[in-house]
Length: 265
Length: 333
Image 1 (spheres, each protein chain N blue to C red):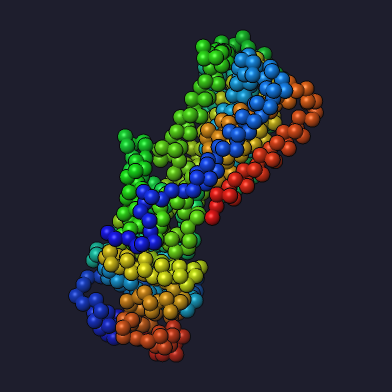
Image 2 (cartoon, each protein chain N blue to C red):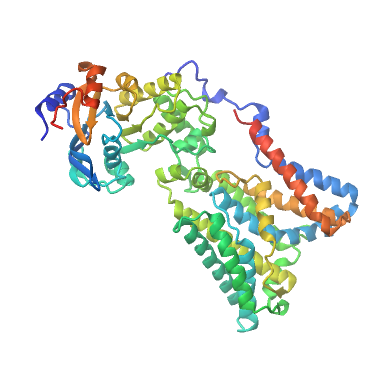
């Protein structure tokens, strides 16, 4: 039941590319609550997509299915055209290259930047001793790739600002070869300046050919970073808009049902 | 790749000097060891006497062994309150098997260590499968294993000194300054352990598990496995320490590990450990053991009443811990 309008708009933006990740007919219910109702979803290489909607619209349910935390009731997920079954977060990372950057970032504050980025994948000499010189050089390379302000990769993560911490969490996923970065409310706890840093970070990820999915309440932020906006309302995908072809008023309308969605409610 | 002007090149970046000095976790405990050793030696020359030092090394090795293992576990974010009980249980198992069942020395000790492994697995199971904080889980097993030791011995105690020729050799002086073999072995263990924590993947892994469990899970570290290994390691080391105390005293009774617990945790924390996990120092625990031993022996030599020793040690601990809090704060932004 993909609707014509939505498809047209996607094609307008994504030309003839094949989606990197595609989900078809995803449904998920919790008891009597239908959290997701037959939702289609697609991510293309090197784009920034914002997933928006009111509380309870199904954003986090969809994201948790994509990152392997929840199992879907029905539907199918494809990675590069191949069907994949995501039974857990590890599947999402290995089979679909999806990395989720959570609000708490899950960094080891007592270790330095380099050690955090390469945690549990440190290159060693003779299989035992960590090659620290190489580790810090590699860490510097990843940090520079994303143009993160970082005086040294030998600083403890506990001493960094919010934006820098986001950068370390993203670098950790990037170093693991991930291609899709799901960011849950990345600017929620940050000041204005640090928000700018995160925006730059997202732009740099896109420039490196990565795909970013941002879940956000902050429309201002969404309109700054996203190429494409997907609106969920009560478990349904009610609209997909290219940023260049929509307005904040229309998006707010889609979220609140003041504007009629592309699918019937 | 061009970087922004605001980012100085990596090579020119250095922490300020005072931070690099104060950032050394073991600074405080090392300074305390030096101060107390000099002070007690000035008060009473016998402190620096080689025979006295060798005796301190021997007596400190038992607690030192338990504290060695405990510092790994505490870095991994857990604690084991059953350490003293496990020591007592191992000694009891070894004693009963030797004396009542006529098992040879090596078999009895192996069985005793196997009992310690079981205690470690039980601690890990309650903590990780039942999801109880290890503080409570091991408090429970502490009573359990102490009770088991008493039950096994049926209130009796055994004289075992004639049955354990091999164990006694471990306590003999070595050619190196007449320090006992057990001390030499323990010092080696501390040095190797500390070296591996700094240079191998052991350090990052344990610090991630204890510092931020979710981070460890996200990068694919098997957190329950790491913690289980640490629990078992602590129990085995405590069991071994219990057997060695049995050898040292020549007798087995259920109270071998009584009062160990607070010492072991005090040593680990004085050495730079934290009850929150994630940080700590292996070699720091060694200095912590030395410090405790110097203070105990020094107070004894200085004729401080045994009744008053607890007060003095308590004050020293609080002062030491406070200074360490100040040190940590001073190096944070």
